Length: 127
Image 1 (tube, rainbow, N blue to C red):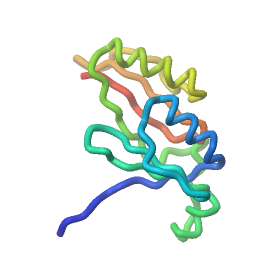
Image 2 (cartoon, rainbow, N blue to C red; image 1 turned 180 degrees about the vertical axis):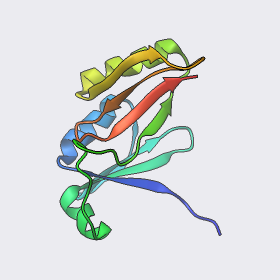
Image 3 (cartoon, one colour; image 1 turned 45 degrees about the vertical axis):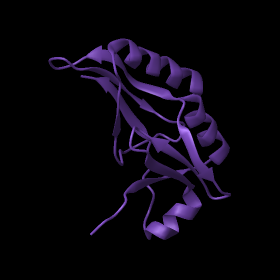
Image 4 (cartoon, rainbow, N blue to C red; image 1 turned 60 degrees about the vertical axis):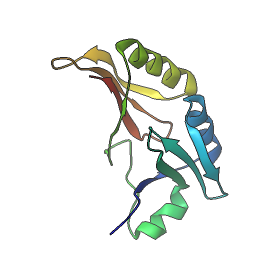
């Protein structure tokens, strides 16, 4: 069976979310009054950011409180250690929160974790 996959996250402010991901350099996949959407990675993986009040009824359950739990952490691959450090600066300037500063971990790994303005976490690393 042929299928496509994408992610849906709940957010509280579409304008803030759009501005954040544009500042990081992601390409828009369009926007409506209920969502903003971006392409991620070489294969254009789509993440839709829905207003929480729209997403919750569709899920038929609560949207996670990102301040107290993790829904999922997507990893963004960087081409070099310098690129990881550049990502950190972009995230800070765009208004994201650095969860863990860039550092070496394990053999041949270097990266950091950040949260977007709604608390959705991403890992950026080079290996």
